[in-house]
Image 1: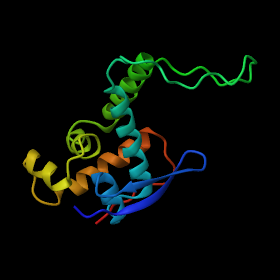
Image 2 (image 1 turned 135 degrees about the vertical axis):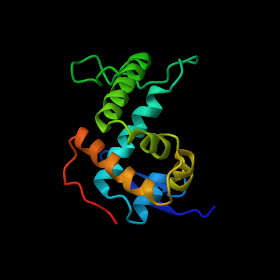
Image 3 (image 1 turned 135 degrees about the horizontal axis):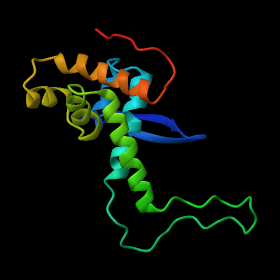
Image 4 (image 1 turned 45 degrees about the vertical axis):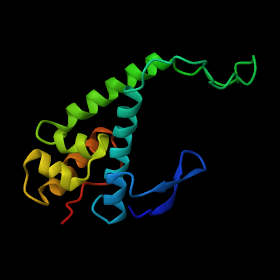
Length: 155
């Protein structure tokens, strides 16, 4: 597998190095098949999916301690169990907003990390049908997340 490393900015001034070959969604975006709005929507869904799948914590909690005893200290972190439940609720609401018929390819590519060709074969679809359906699913997902921009049809 060829490694394609790029720098991505996340949060406030943090940057990470990402291997585009690891995520099918990143691969599609790097080749212009998915726009920035669709990519952001997919990444939000994937983050909620991964957070919702976390098991119970069985080791010591290494969360950051509050900065001080004043009201300006670090806000309390969400309990891991509550974070998991909240992520599961967000994931379920997002998938429900996409609608039936579109969620299969969305889940396979974004959450399970399957390539688009493998997802098409698993669903019994003709070649290149998945790209169109995934684009529609990501547009609906971006609408659910109220991401800026407009939906575009990619050919």
